Image (tube, rainbow, N blue to C red; front, side):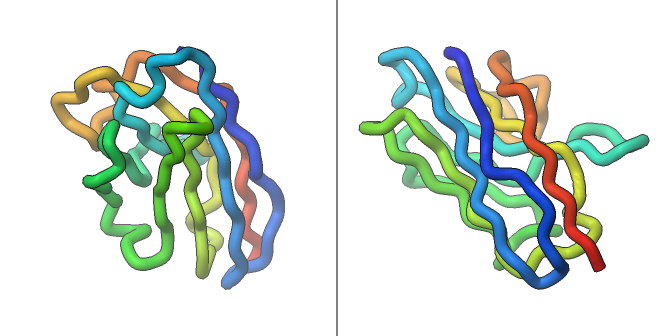
Length: 123
């Protein structure tokens, strides 16, 4: 699976952005998908994840109620809608795929990664 993330940018606090991740390969629907982020000097952390079928989603406590992950298996895409953005959301965001994650929140569970897209939230 090859992944291409897009949609990052500069936004003011309180604003919104929508990230998208396009996947290649006909087996996309078999993979769980996750969004992770990494700020300078910090470890990569889970933001949200979604089961292959889309019927289960997982969120970091820091983004619950503000971010929504979704997928369209017919279009091989996964999206992250980010609302009420805060300066602490500033990071490079990565999409990732896992065939059978043991832990949806652990980046080690994911074997395929996109290139990352920068999100900057100004105060």
